[in-house]
Image 1 (cartoon, rainbow, N blue to C red):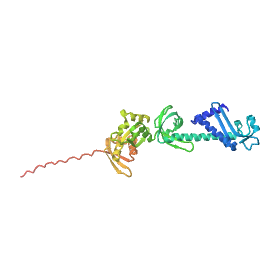
Image 2 (cartoon, rainbow, N blue to C red; image 1 turned 90 degrees about the horizontal axis):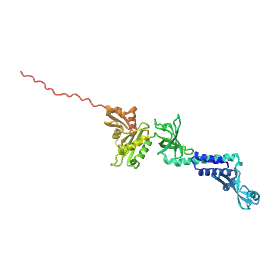
Image 3 (cartoon, rainbow, N blue to C red; image 1 turned 180 degrees about the horizontal axis):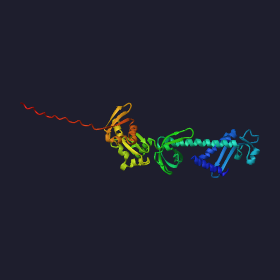
Image 4 (spheres, rainbow, N blue to C red; image 1 turned 90 degrees about the vertical axis):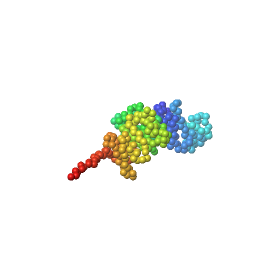
Amino acid sequence: MDSKFFETLAEVGTENSLDTEKMIETVKSAMQKSVQRMYPECKELIRVDIDPEKQIFDVFLLQTVVEDEPINHTEINIDEARTIDPGTYAGATLEHKLDISKFSRASAQSAKQSIKGDLRDINRDRILDKFLCKENDIITATVMQVEPGRGAATLMYDKTELYLLRQEQIPGEELTEGMQIKVYVTGIINRNKKPIIKLSRVHRDLVKRLFELEVPEIFEGIVEVKAISREAGSRSKIAVLSHDPNVDAIGACIGAKHSRISAIVKELNGEKIDIIPYSEKPEEFISNALSPAKVLRVEVLNEEEHACVAYVPADQLSLAIGNKGQNAKLAAKLTNFKIDIKAETAPVPEPEISDVEQPETAEE
């Protein structure tokens, strides 16, 4: 067998992230199927030997030596058998080596298609086994290439190529070759054919998973992430609640000398993060969500429709609304309330009317 076959075998294995042993089993299976089509009566009597080190690729038919005319390919006449092995005898099993180069074009094409099909199945199962447990979680991948113009990035994770579309990248972030980034696995589509792993760095749950990684109290369930709202690349708000009176939820998320929150902000390319104390009381939660603005009071207008009015000092109105309404939008998403923000001006005091004593009338 030409050494080029084994070079191709190694290349295909590398392209499909399969080791040589797995590739050999795949080719063996395909060749057996192909030979079975040529010799259907010899199902269990076909042997394929492949040894890349010795560059051996042989196909054998195991035939019974008979003195009479063979009934089919499971038998071989003793006279023909002795041209292959002079010492053979009637009743013996002869390993009849087939000339692969004489296989028909149809057989060769059939073997090729079978190998491709097996590789697709192996690759599909390998990808599903690797990523089913990673769905709705984050992985750390290496940037291999960024397409000029389109901006889509090719990532490598555990010998598997993945793609991060431009719209799933953090706005303003420049990915470069060799960077290691964390991405959120949003789902797997086309599972029955060629699975596609959907990735995102703009999904709000990326923030949640990052906090779980950096904050042990969240991972252990002592501190719970109740809600998240996000405008990727700009700002996120995260509402947290402590289930232990001795643990400060916000302090745990920030960490000593801001170490935990700084690590998350760095991973998100400098995105600002507001950590909000969660409250079961809508008025209190909404008030907290509009931070950093100070809220005077909140009136819930309709609990079913989740509508409310938040009153803030006049000098805090622009802060409460935020640049292009960002702070108000994020607070609304975080609390799931429609928030109408109004400035409350101090009432103008009415002038005090003092009792002026009328001059007494002089008695005449």
